[in-house]
Image (cartoon, rainbow, N blue to C red; front, side, top):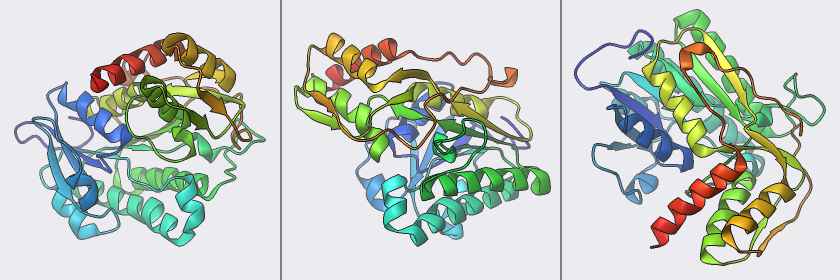
Length: 302
């Protein structure tokens, strides 16, 4: 196990916000490597989640230090995925700061006490529309995610907590995503069901398959890590029309429409080089990503 984590039987990783779209894929990736995933989430989310064999679950709130500490007992690493998305952040700014920033401070504080590493999700939303190099977020969600990156740097410098933060663009794949970025995932599921769906933004974006994100977060928990690394993940950069055309070609369904302005994130965002310590991290192109997602969704329907 990485960082300064201790060894005491089978490796165990705490997934904060672990019942979500990305969390369940990270849990599966960890379990495939013999690591026990312990999902920590709000009680209603835990209650409606069917846990695969070998998974653990603890109900609690990321803004409660006591429930986090209880969930983290015996864990060798933390994957931090909890947070409010763009629309929810705009709707309740104070709650956005509590969950996204205070919650992250408590996660990193727990990691310092346990002596374990953290892998967490930032977002391409830390960039504004005018620069693909200098973070200047134009949403409160992006502001909170940039703050979490700062928290990670401070806890690495002051408390020796190693971390990996990922800034994925549009994450898509099988599962229940949320927020405006969920449009491509919703469209994929709708195509299998032969139902109309609307993707609520247009333009050129980076499509990042969910399993590319999950694989990298899981790798961070099973390889030596130091410092506070942050990586932009642009995935396969295409126009939304390219995605919908490929989806129609593979699914035979043309009921997907695109409506809305481009996102306030640079269209030409580039991925950062992946450091050697993370191992091979191939990028899934949209054709392969759509193919794999449709196959899995059709299997679920069957």
